[in-house]
Structure formats: structure tokens, C-alpha cells
Length: 488
Image (tube, rainbow, N blue to C red; front, side, top):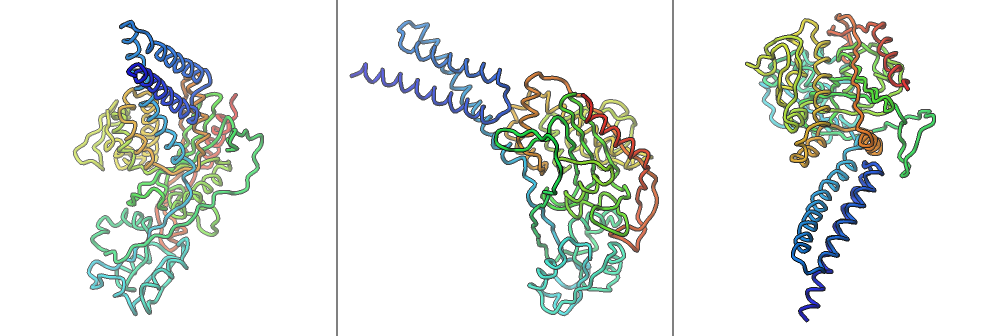
């Protein structure tokens, strides 16, 4: 009887370890990032350990039993830990890509800080101004009308003119968005002291980014996900919004086109100043700052950049730049070479030395946002942003301690962005990189212009600082993108 129990226990151990090994291997296959040569090797090692460990259970010699414990202990740990990481990564790929499906617009009803009203219902029989350039003014008005009786809605088309008239009391309340508050806060440093928010609501809209485009020789993967081939463009929009929700529509403070050539392992970062004076896609009349295109959503910003360079952009990513803090801290900080010494505007007391500076997340974000320390202002901030992104991605690809913070890393990444890049594009890149571990070449480019004061689409009665594009630099940047993408 005792022999049968022992025998059953041995077969039970063999079955459990084998099952865990199969589940681990299945998760690795599902991940679809491991090249076939490594899959074959991994499968062989797992099978060998299972066979040898299983056989040694039936031998009586002590050293064989010791070998069994060691081999099965390694196999169990490897399968459990590896399976856990593979499962988390699979989940991240499933949820972290093609996740640009909805966008939010956060609206606020505000009154002057000295106003007696403390609730939305108290605006009955009073006036409320709103902007005609809202994405969905009818929905906004309907939402308010359902809450307040007999309110007079007054449409206005100039951001600053309307706000000034509101402050002097021409109407009782004003509807603004998070984006508008971000814009106004640049010129009214004590904005939060001058206004009072009575009511906040969100309007969610499904993203329509399925424009008909002609694609030539597009390779497909087995599950029918469409990939863009050996080269493609990605638009990166960086948001520095007060909102913590990355899906919230906000100004595009950072604007980059990332051109990737997988054959030559080349990445080109092309940056565009936030104040670039461009025609926002789909609009007529006055031009506007590129950053204001983000008020209408990520897709509109991408289309505007496509129009500027006369190029096709395959994917978009919207980054919450404040989330860079978590990411940089997780990789243990980054080293940045500053071309000048300055005192940080965003972190009082922090002095940046000329040369290499080690930065934690907060300092990296402050460095990426710095423009007051430079005579060229936003032009230099663009270069800083490129440095921070490049240094962060390089650290991610070389850090040996990421496994210790893997859960935190994936959680941080999931808050960092929304994108329409399919996971198959990313897994294809990872698999290609693991195949030969080739190094990548990072190049950078930027466009320039001349600063001036001019009316804009959101402020037709007000002169704002804009940058008139230098067409020669736009053409040069376009040609550089083409050169990188077409290189063999």
C-alpha cells in the first residue's frame, strides 16, 4: 500500500511539473516575441529537464534524488516565475496597444471667485457664455439645460476676448474645458484664484481614425492584423495637461514624427514647435498654433502634421508627459548632457550643470519642460524633450534591474500613453530585435520659423505669439524622413 502511495506521489509530481512547464511554454508562444531558434532551444531544455528529473525520481541513489530536487526546483521556479512574467506581458500587449478608442472632453462651468453662486442650480435665469469652437456645442448646451432652468446661452468665438469679458462681469458664467484652462493659465498665473468651478462633466466620443488610405504591399500576420512593413511614421503628441486622464483632449505641447526603418535599424525624431502657425486640418479661415489642434483630439493633431509635411503617418501615440516621472524613476534615472548651465524654472533651487547630469523623474520632466533658460525658448525645449525620450528608451532597453520592477514598469507604461499601434507591430519589432540584437541609430531633426504676433482660429480678435514656419526647414525635414524611410 505504501509503495502505491509513493508511486502515485511520484507520478503526481511529474504531472504537476510537466503541466506547469507546458503552461509556461504556451504563454511564451502566445507572447509571439521569441524567435523560433530560441523557442526550439527553450522547448528542448524544458523537455530534457522534465524527462531527466522524472526518471531520476525512480532511482534509489542519493545523488540522483538530490539531482531530482535541484532540477525540479529549478524547473518549478523557472516555470512559475517565467509564466507569471509572460502572462503579465501578454496582458500588457493585449491592453496596451490599439487602446486609442475613445477620447474625453472635460467641461467646467465657472464663475468669478467672488460670485455668490456655489452650485449649478443657482445660475437659473442668468447668462452663460460658451465657445463656438467646442467639438460638440449642442451636447454641451443640452447637458447644462438638463440641470438648470431658463439659462441664456451666449456663443463666442474668441478665447481671450470672451474670458476678459467674463472677468469684468458681462455674463454670469462661462463654460470652459481642461484645455482652455491650460491655455489661460499661461497668461493668468493666478487663474485658480480668480475663478470658481461650479460643475464638471465629461463627454465621451468614440475615435474615428479609419480614414480610407491606399496601402501598397502591406504584409499581414497570421491573425490578419495589418502591419506597415519595414518602415513607418508615428506621430507623438505630448500632453502636459492638468487632467490625469490620458484620454482627455488636451493641447499637444510636444509634437514629433518618429520615422522608423526596421531594415537599417534607424529611428529619426522630427520635432515641431508647439507654436507653429499652421492650418488645423478640416478648418478654414485663420491658422492656429499647432498645440491648439490637440483641443480637437489626437487624430486632428496627426492630420494637421500630415498636412504640414505632406506625408502619411501610420500610427499615433499620445504621451502624458507627467508620467515620465514614474518611468524614469523605475529605470533608475537617466543621464542627460546639457549644453548650458541654468537654474531650473520648474524646480526652484535645482541647478543644471553644463555637461552630464544624472536626473530622476522629477528633474527629467522639469528639463523636458524648460524653455525660459534659453534664448531660443521652445526651440531648445524640443531638443531637451528628444534627449529625455531617447535616454529613457535606451535605459529601458539596457537596464538589468527592470525584472525587479516589472509589475511597476508595466503599470507605469499603461498610464503613459494611448495609441492605435497594434500589438502585432510591437511584437514583430521585439522579435526582430531578439533575433540579432542589432544596435539602432537615433537621428534627430527639427523645423524652425520666425516668431510673430497674429490672430488665431481660437482667438480671432486677439494677437497671440505664433511661429511662422520656415518652409525651407519643413522641406528639409520632409526630405530627411523620406531618406530614412527609403534607405535599404
